[in-house]
Length: 409
Image (cartoon, rainbow, N blue to C red; front, top):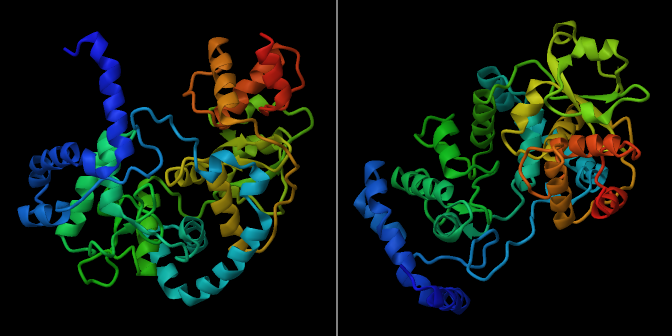
């Protein structure tokens, strides 16, 4: 047991190790690396591969989202959580991606048709994911994936999750699917044209050309096929839409705009919901269960979201990501903007949203995680708080609600 008086000294020493850089921290990292061999061996990874790929490997302490002593958690860098819907689902950006997507749809027509026959996922959805993930391959992935994953497994905030990814990356190298030089990733360790973590690659990679490798790094059809494989496994329903833009009836209760409130699409239509973008609901879809989402409360488009919407969330859990991908796919197929405009609204700061979530939780309105993100459950809980306190109902985390909470409600 460490003596109580020595604990501050130990924490200070750890901080100095981190600030001094990799040279002083290598001993601990080397011990951690060596301790991974039994698990790697159990996965069938050769000793030669393990030794070759870990030789000289050092942690990268400049990565975000590390749990370093004396260093506070950095604010979330994901655009889905720090931008307003209007900023994130930018019509200008989507129009440009859609124009290029239509050309790519022609270029890869045969391959996309074959992928859809095999997995049931339409080409525009796959092209939209490719656009969002790496700008159709234009984004430069400059990080050494193995180094990223090892660092996250060593000092990240989700060590066990990334330990599995580190071992899976070694497995990929051992099987010869890609060279170490070619295994580049984002700062979060996602690889390839449509951004797969190593475990996802091993689970969903598709070898279309029979060369023994699912090449998600430079082979466009195989990257798109891997994405389709994942979506099919997660429950994609062939021939069904991802969502319908709608107009809600006057006086609609925005607290009902969350995933747990579902009705058949036909029932929503009977209750006054109208399809806003001119798309027809097929008779076969009228019995499909769907919920309503209002990403900006009453200040922007609203959507009916059947099962495929939530399948897309398995690729990225953020609702704005799904809206971006789904809308871009629609624009590739039929270039029409949203029927309703996004109004100019502001987001409160992450720390203020965390405060609001804690207040909502303490008063029994909210039972999800405290993460400072204005997701559907948070917005529904805010609406419940507004109703309980006689405030204007819009289910949106604005400065007025924050001020009311800070006064003690």
